[in-house]
Length: 614
Image 1 (cartoon, helix red, strand yellow):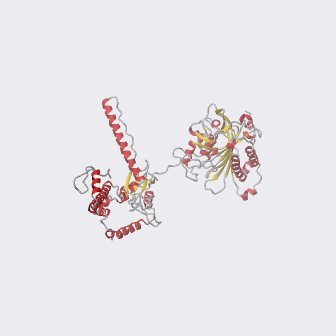
Image 2 (tube, one colour):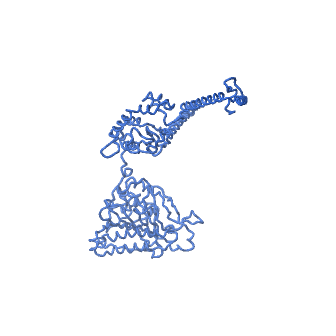
Image 3 (cartoon, helix red, strand yellow):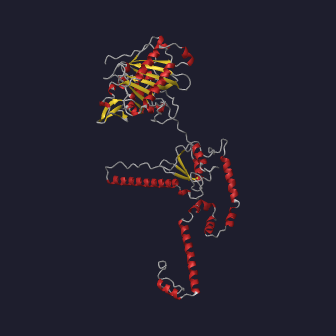
């Protein structure tokens, strides 16, 4: 009481001002009822004035019932609304009088909404047809975010933003879940802030939503950025005037795109003014490089040799001059890669093998699913198997190799069309010297050759899956695992009909140096390949025994089984090799269905030999 009493203050009886202690003393001596009633009456009057002053202050600052503040548009539409709102807040407007003001207006609003809903109906369902509001693809390139409850373009369901989303989709725009630097348009509803376009009854202003505030914040930051760039430009001009040696003016940086903030009615009006846009044509597959047909055909009685001046691998491009390996891997017309077993003597380059199969054996336009560039296919989709002889294989299990650990990632040191990586790596690493390459080991590898993946995306080739790497060691004779060949199966692109098995026999290891252009490391490589069509069950049962097929499968099964187990193989996963062998057996089953009678009739024989170099 003493702090609230202002000195000097009026006396209790309305006379001369006095100190608080004097007024207390006077009150103790004046104990009659009339004096007490006068003091209480005056206190009640002062309390009422205080409440009114607080209310006036809150109205002026906008803190009193912010959700019920009238907007400028509402005041323009109803000039008498300000007076009526003030009367309602002061308690001078009765409920009956307020309802009497709405009589006739509610029916009119309801009728207009029904008319609007009827125009939004189309023959296909409840979604609105906005084709007549905006021009075709007029929102192409826009990233749109919606906030608040829609009233003018609201759907009949609880989600009031459904019609606006339909409008944006039909006119080529994209959506964003939140306001970011990529947002170009924010559409705000006439209703409350709500939640996800649904009414909550909280009656919060849509301008208090996080999306709205973020858009305003980004626009303000953009204005600040523009001012800063202008200031830097002016400073540079001033420096150039003082120093004649400075000739280059300051180059202003491009400011972020301003976010256009529109209410529902403004959005419709703005939409009608936009011109139509033509949607960009999708890239034509193979546009960046010239595609050729294979110039070398499979033949039972012919060998193909490396050319004098050209690389036999052709850089992975089918049809290039001298590219006999690329042509040998190209699928027959109407077919695409499905499975393979690649054997490569003592040396096999996993990246080179993957790149050649991806670029050459996978048919253009045969992708059955959409994918982005450099996305990797699932492990079980179009996986294949590689096997080569490890001269150090017999050392596995010795004390010299027990400390080696597998490399979890191997990044190739190659560049150009063979730049890529594989997880896990192709060689072990010694803990005492991690930079030193150790022994090769078996693994299920995810291989990604960048140029091959990009080419597959452009030409819609199927993406290869996992590369199962197997090893052969001293369990069998050296000559047998030293063979070099590609055993492939191609499946019909249409998914109907029988497949084709192809055998490609080579005298070179699966590495780029063996098939390179003339140079210091150039080798003379010979290739033989032929196709064998799979038979139906009835024809297969009537077909005679094929010595060629029997020799081929006996040799391949001996290869994949010729391995001394190692603790580093398949990164310690015992089931990895079983999956690889299951995939190989699928390929062998296709060979069992293939018709090898042409090879038998032509007298073709397979010979496992040990080269003279060894």
